Image 1: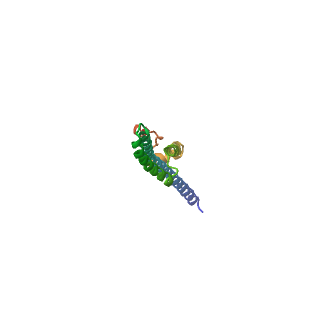
Image 2: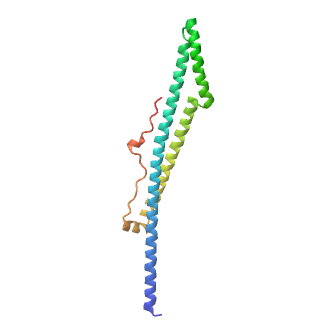
Image 3: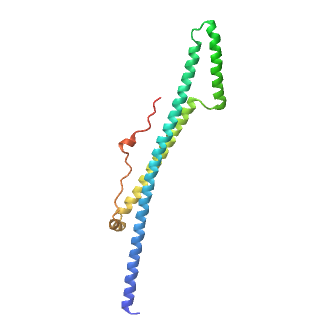
Length: 183
């Protein structure tokens, strides 16, 4: 082989290696970009879960708490300052009321507002942990992506394809508000 042919083969090999490296680097940046977008979508999913599930659980707890208060208020009112003829009437009403309470207790033996409050507390903790994990994953992916953009020689390809650094997760003021729980 002539020296020109050998030089041409070496130059072409170097060009192909550089092109291969450039394509691999570009694809790596694009993969990390997609991972960042996926992690950001996971945060949205966690926020949606927080809103949907906690709002529903708060409504359930409020509803059952109201039911218990009404029931206890009725029983207390029935017992207060009655004449003998009223007591007979009220005894029948209380028996009917207790029958309804027993029916609910038999059908739903675990249905108590304190159990609902415990379930709500557990759901809040689980939801917040899921949300924190999603935020950490996003920030981790952004960190990897940003490192890829600033480390030489990958920064050359990042500049060529117009890749921009991403911001770490910052909570917008509207999203800092948690689900309001008034009891």
